[in-house]
Length: 377
Ligand code: UD1
Image (cartoon, rainbow, N blue to C red):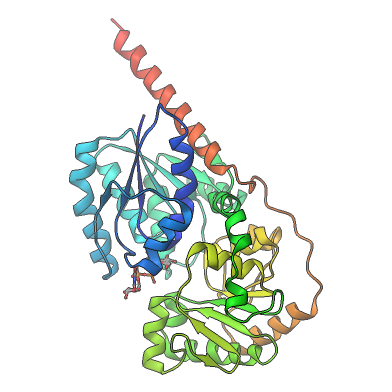
């Protein structure tokens, strides 16, 4: 079975690593990895390949940064001749970034089957670029692998056949568990002068939060207020760094009040930092899931989440972007005893096994059907 796997941006890498590892355990699978280059520098890509044990990509498309249309179009243009040549049995895409939708579109238009891992999540906010990527990818993918029940419900409501939807759990948690021994050994918190359980971790990069000056200034003000009580460490995403530079706040490696602004971390150091923290404040989707698995309280600085299971089963709370509300919710979270949470169903570190087993079964069924057809007189 020939499988071509596509990654492009930082949140793809921890989803793909366990899939590639699992595929490599099956000699009947010939797996290839294509990196679109949507994220390209060491901090956003290279270090993640190392930390997660991802192999060097078979092909790098080196698309780089640009507008949405540019990124999506360039991935499609550069990918098409490669997929035409490889003719894999299935193309696997993960998550919701521009590389995901571009990979899926290119494959289906060549008549190649597409499997989408992390399908069905919906924020119901179409101003989010990721929501458009999710809707389009799911509408054209053949097999949809979901992480939580809401994903199945959303896809059914959109008219997708139940037999193409597979509830398999969450590959992000596979990576978290596979790297546990390594991140448990990391001394990143101590190197930053932080005491376990006595600091908060911040990440912000959503265009709706960081591209608007008034919103971003309000968020920074809220963080400074919280920082008076709980020291905060803020690994700054490149998009946010560009905005900070124009606002003259948050220079890398600087401390403002009790906020430490640092360069983006690799996977191992970042998970270690979060695992040792008292609280996370974020607009990331992945971090809502990781904090749920780690039992760390999480305040999501957005108006909604596409991952409702992190609220019902996990540690997540949606607090919006009003500075006053963020500050009061943070103090409320700090005053509360740690909530007892349960892991969402199938977030057990074995999602990749289920996905690869399903892909092999589907391939065997398709090959069997094709052989039967060929034998017909
Ligand atoms: C992308 C994804 C988003 C994901 C995020 C994680 C889409 C639509 N968005 O957003 O879903 O949560 O990645 O990071 O696909 N840059 C660098 N180095 C890099 C890559 C980017 O410095 O390796 C800078 C560039 O200046 C670029 C900016 O970051 O313009 C934003 O990158 P881009 O890929 O456009 O979107 P993200 O905000 O990273």
